[in-house]
Image (tube, rainbow, N blue to C red; front, side, top):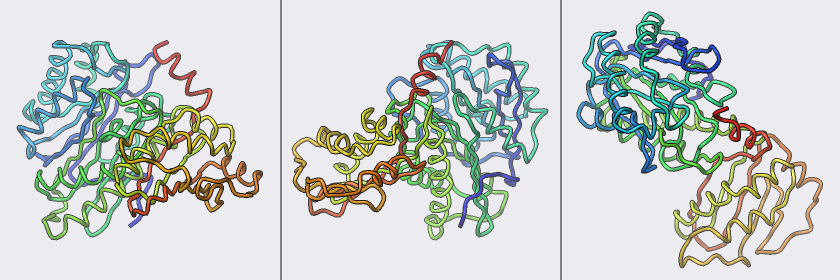
Length: 398
């Protein structure tokens, strides 16, 4: 089963994207995804305690109505986060207008927002933009939608997989404020499978846990992180307990493909780095160490410079918060791709030019064996940290 970098048609869904005037420069910024009928739906959301209005709104809708969702509306440019009661009213008003436009109930509409925090939605632009988005609906509008949800992204993120009579397809956005703690960024995924909400939720949690939760760009977690999954049932292919694992495997492939595309398009990024921590006695120990390395500015800037400065990796591992599970520096071994640099805490007589050449590649795998005698391991996908990252975020609002 191979994923594709495109979406053709997902039976049971139409999508449209328009320029509602939300951005500073003319570009599509409002996306509408509409199902032909009520869908099973599931979502995973930010664990940040400062949650945007659309996150709170969607969580409530999915809790009350997981088998009746019919539409998702996504806006760029304004996050509708830290906007108080007015932000909640605006999220609900957005859903009300979509429901009126497509002919469903307001609680059948989910909303997603991305952009600047602390700004109220320009509701007059939504009021005129929603009918325009409805008029733009078509089965093959996914490429336009993927572009319309971008903020600092430089390229759209699209993925789809068709196998065994069903299709799973998704779009995502995210290039900064990415840390592994649920789903990180925005993504809308749809399928024509027929599956109950509780099974859909189980599949999404498992898929996100080994894909979106394993990516790091800068270590910051957004207020708006959301991944939504809708199932139309249009294929007639019923997913039950006996084939849920296969469906979850398909979903995971799509989620992992989108997650990796987010990292590769990280703000100012020039290198994709896979960090594998092995030989741990506990999985959470491997996870904590891998994430500490992946978010270390010193590690990330060394990779930006193509410098195999591996001491920074061991230093980051040594400061990971693993409580009383002591890390023994004399058991650590390290590889860049297939080149071993360190064995049991001591540098080897390796070829430094080759090490720097590996560190300069567009894609690099770093493997750290903790030597604790355990079998637990953890993988994180991250990127380098460049001058452009600082420039992009230093002038984000200006």
